[in-house]
Image (cartoon, rainbow, N blue to C red; front, side, top):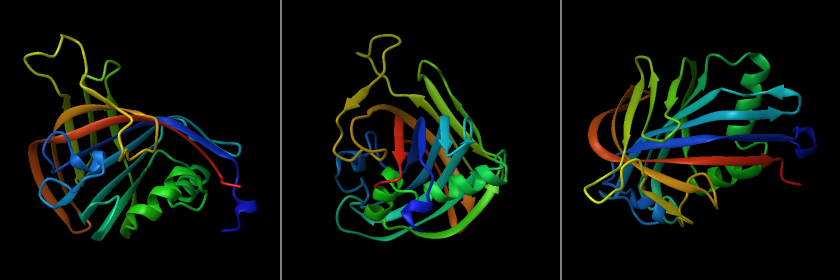
Length: 215
C-alpha cells in the first residue's frame, strides 16, 4: 500500500501473552525459548485508538503463534493465526487489518519483519479480555478457539501487592521502553492447526503506545 494512502494512526493499550516457556520467558530477553521452540496466545487490548477519524477504543486483537529458534535472531517454522474482535464495525475492521498487517508502518510493521510469520488464517470472533487494574491477573477467552488465564508472579519475598517487573528488556514484543509485569499462565487453543493445553508456564503484560505511518 502507498504510504500516502495510509491514515495517521495511534494505538495505546495493553498487551500480554501466554506461552510454553518457563517463567520468565527467555524470548523477552532476546534468547532462545526454553525448549528451543515457542507457541502461545498473544493479545492486544486497545484502550485508546484512532485510524484517521475512526475510533478503535476498547477493541481487541489476538493471535496464536509458533516458531523455532530465537525470534529476534535465527529462527524458522514461524507461523500464526489472527483473531479480530467481532465488536468492530466494517471501518474498524479495515483499520485493524491495515495496522496489524503491517501496512500502516510503526511497530507492527517492524516486528512483523523480525518475526516473519506466515499467517495461516484470520477470523472475526468475540474476544473477551479482562485485565485487573492492579495487574494481579489478566485473561482472554475466544470461545471454542483459545483461552488464557494468568495470575501475577509472586513468591515468599515479594511484598504484598507488589508486582515482579522488568525494565528495558532486550526482546520486548511491543517495542522499546515498556515495563513487563510477569505472570504464571494456564492456556489452551484448538484452531487453525494449533492444539495445546498447558499450565504453570510464562506470561507477561506490557503497555504499548504506537503510531504511524512511518514517513
